[in-house]
Amino acid sequence: SKAKLFDEKTDMKVTFKDVAGLEGAKEEVQEIVDFLKNPEKYTSLGGKIPKGALLVGPPGTGKTLLAKAVAGEAKVPFFSLSGSDFVEMFVGVGASRVRDLFKQAKDKSPAIIFIDEIDAIGRARGKNNFTGSNDERENTLNQLLTEMDGFGTNTNVIVLAATNRADILDKALMRAGRFDRQIYVDLPDVRERKEIFEVHLRPIKNSESLDMEFLAKQTPGFSGADIANVCNEAALIAARKGKKAVDKQDFLDAVDRIVGGLEKKNKIIT
Ligand code: ATP
Image (cartoon, rainbow, N blue to C red; front, side, top):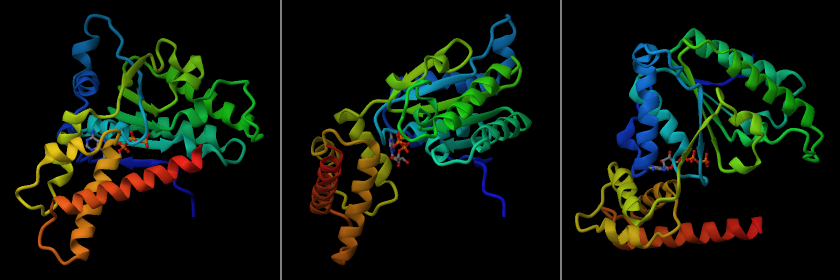
């Protein structure tokens, strides 16, 4: 059987209302939604629609979610792959996968291509990474650059890529006509954390007295992914105790558990 080349989703259910906070980033990607929905309006005066944008920010802050929401809002197919999938690939496979990805997206345009962890293929060239797989990575990167340069002005495929290490990316990726826009996706502040709790509490049976502002204040430094995790853990903790609804104490226990997990993870890294 043939290995799956990449993910293709044709009816994205994710929209901006699933993305809490991130007002600035949402405003910036709204423009991309408009380009996809109404390209002629933008090219009518001779302007060129951008081909790519880089979503930059710490892990778990909603970069993937935002990219999916762009496709969902524009009602276009979403093609995605992750840079880390290329790490252990045989010679030539990475470049051909990139070629196939762009071909499929062009066939179904307007479309979004999303490349997660682009730093895994897009690190500055010529720097030894001690893994011996540099040539293959460079081939993949070169193919990506070739594909983006090869887009006609009316292709109407927009490439979004995510990274938490924009500083190590090959500058060639950021050149005009490639990922020449950077959109910052930061950790949420207390107000945004409250909004993220609201989104993730939607499917959860919680006690009515639950104070989301309190929860937001208890979770400084948490990403959206951490908060999603807290809500899920809290529901499991309450269920284990046979409760009918998730209450404040379950959330505090879940926060403790997630904090414990984060501390462990940091210990391994440093
Ligand atoms: P990574 O860099 O680790 O790939 P990411 O920035 O792409 O992370 P996502 O994968 O989009 O983060 O986020 C993981 C999950 O966390 C989402 O599916 C969602 O459940 C939750 N989440 C993150 N940010 C938000 C947000 N702003 N609003 C609502 N949910 C969020």
